Length: 149
Image (cartoon, rainbow, N blue to C red; front, side, top):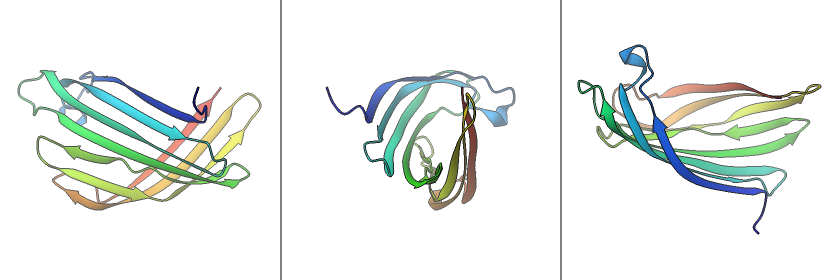
């Protein structure tokens, strides 16, 4: 039957060219796969990853082709009272241009239970330990708020 605290999945991924400005998207239809693993078997420390790859197959002929991969390792350490430490930098590689970025980060988050809602807030400064190519970030801040009803 397996361990219910461990999740694994693999499946297709498709990206539609929905950007309204050229700077906001590739202008291409792309397809590929996504793979995820999450291990929550330890109540203090959870870990996993998300791996994706996609390549363009149609779209604006005047735009560069897409052939990109991403790997996102994620680590969570529970501090208690809803607080946790996190690391979740998205490592990217462009197979067309050989551009890449490998950020690492350390952040903090807080889960708050309201009446019928769970709110998860986090902020994580990230530094790219290696990066190559135009537009690749050296520093960034990953932040989010998630509501579960």
